Figure 1 (spheres, one colour):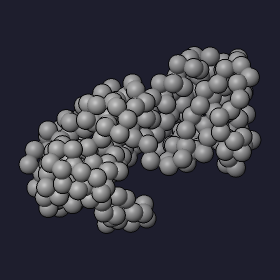
Figure 2 (cartoon, helix red, strand yellow):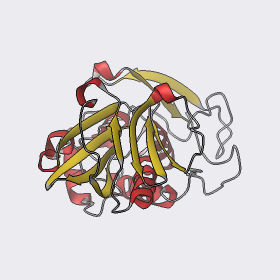
Figure 3 (cartoon, helix red, strand yellow):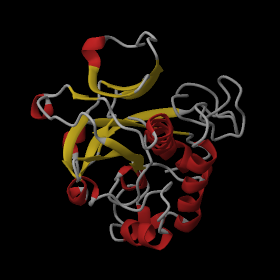
Figure 4 (tube, one colour):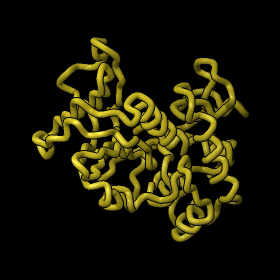
Length: 267
């Protein structure tokens, strides 16, 4: 699932491409909204909220929000003129066109259309956004500390605590903090520093497609442990390990992988 900085870039791309322009086409290719008629709507802006995208429209005096979520396979592309789409047409779930500019959402995991006033119904549960203008460190820490027995990996991935961390940043944060992913949150020696590092990581990567937590942008050198199982730890040389786990508080989300170095991150 995309990290928060990936969704931030998607929002920025859509916002820049569509501006405050009139949309000649608003084509939502999902059963619930296939008949929605919003042609002629003004695009008021697109913003990210954690891993959620909110595209705000004004049509005939009413404000609407197109709420989308990339989930595992989704992406938004922007095309000019008659440029050929880079993914199959049957994967398109939303098409927005303003003049010669077309934005296409492919394989989106969520496509909702709702009144803008009702946005809290779909993102109200989300915790402080690490890349949001209203980031609230104290509130994020309060939410995390409220469940100190929970493994740090699960707590960081829970978007109700703080929004924007996916599996990659979780693994990298645990490594640079010297914390095993299964350690109870209450035993993290410096939670404030971990949360500040999380924000720093996402902020440093939000403007570039090549994510890096090591400070090295060379291919194969960008990450410390994520997806590096059976390879040598960059810091000590110990073999990096991986373990699949199920979040006890959200078992229906399925298994996720934890990567760690047994020497740098002892249990």
